[in-house]
Amino acid sequence: MGYKILIIEDEIKIARFVELELKYEGYEVDIAYDGRSGCEKGLNFENDLIILDLMLPGMSGIEVCRRIRKESEIPIIMLTAKDDISDKVMGLDIGANDYMTKPFAIEELLARIRSILKRNKMKPVNDNTSILSAGKLVLDTQKYRVAFNDEEIQMTKKEFQLLEYLMQNKDIVLTREKILEKVWGYDYLGDTNITDVYIRYLRTKIDDKYGVKYIYTVRGVGYQFKSE
Image (cartoon, rainbow, N blue to C red):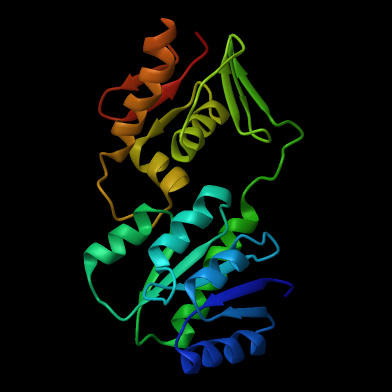
């Protein structure tokens, strides 16, 4: 199968059990038993997916996820013994792709892994250009840079991803649900108004600041990006 999965889990029996099941399915597996070493291994881009426990010695799973998300979009499935919706929402908000509560059925974990890896494989990779442009606005996906008239615009990772998605779909009306699915993930459980909040961030940094009009609201539907 060729995929490499990193398990960050301090309960040795659980880590070993999951490792054996994954290897049986044909995956390559690496294990870290604490947060700090897990974070170091997680920042190794050779991994294709991370199974991350929430409660870890040395560094919490939340902090591990947060640090990895600053550098990588590698899929992360979080595990926890706490069936608390606030923990689930927090994990997804900071970038986890999925969430499972212990004890879990290994068949379900394997199914979720297959689903995430399949979706990740289907994402377009460098479609011959890393540059998206509209008038004086330029977005470089490889350099992770946005500029207007050569003046760089500082953006958070999620702002950048939202703008990239809008520019990739120039002149297409995108529903809030579609934006949530593509930018935050289909299983996002946070506030559905998050799209409106981040659209406002982009307008403040681009439209309002430079006196241009790129992002249009389509009442009752969603948003549309147009060249000025």
